[in-house]
Amino acid sequence: MNLPVFAQDKLNHFAYGQVIFAAVYIVTMEAGLALAVSGVAGVLKEGADYLLNKRAVARGEAAPHGVEVLDAVATGLGGLVPFVLLAM
Image (cartoon, rainbow, N blue to C red):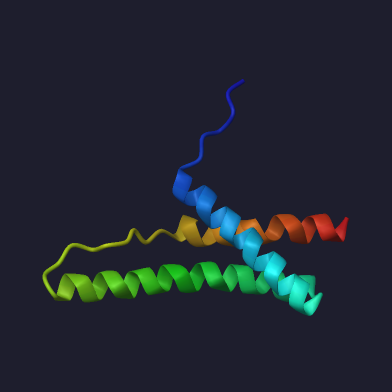
């Protein structure tokens, strides 16, 4: 059985989701809020990348960032793992 192979970018998003969850949870001690913030952070990051790409293309430059829904999902899943562990 082969283990799944994940792109480094997705693993980075996953790790950042965990870091965001931990930071918010340490400050607020609210797991639900920490989970929400990690999910929103993933969506905002991809939204920012989209806007940066749009501006670069309007200037005649190449788009500097990839924009993928799965990046936002990976960030949110990074927050989901510690949320579930805290709920156990």
